[in-house]
Length: 239
Image 1 (cartoon, rainbow, N blue to C red):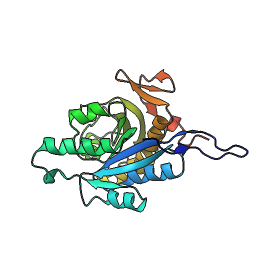
Image 2 (image 1 turned 90 degrees about the vertical axis):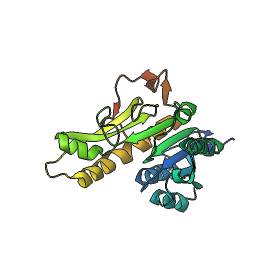
Image 3 (image 1 turned 60 degrees about the horizontal axis):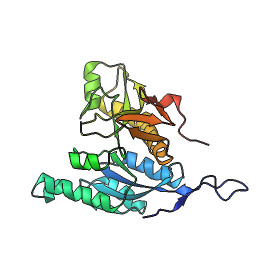
């Protein structure tokens, strides 16, 4: 299905760019702050894409209301509604496939995707994880950082693989851990200073065709990355 043509106006020219907008589907389970950032960046033209669907694993997820307010179609697939896990996994893949996404983004999606889903969208499936991977995959990252006494914490955007939080890292950003931090304060700082910046950046780079996965390695602007890009070294907005 052809999407609308993306382009930002420029004086004296019809558009600065002319290309088909990418189609994005976002999977959510919770509050939806990363989803909100993606919605806003798409609306502002910073991400050359339309979010064509938001799929949640929880009916009560506040992220769903953010999508509704933005006029984005939503769908809820609660695991408890299915007799077997494989039935839920098949329904999720069918639901997302029907939306014909160019890119699938996990934004606080609290389910482990099955291998069939990951393999179907390999190279087109991104996640943002609240740690400096490969440190602290899985849950409770802020608590684990504090318990370990780490001086720096952060977040990572990565391509998704079948290994939990183990796909190739694209970009990271870090924050200093303060002596008086608790889980809440550290979580807020990582979200505000890092996640809400690096996830829209990565989505925008992908939609511009600058970011891709080749043979399990990340390529950006035609060069292979031997280590993740670092957010302080990049600018969010390309003018």
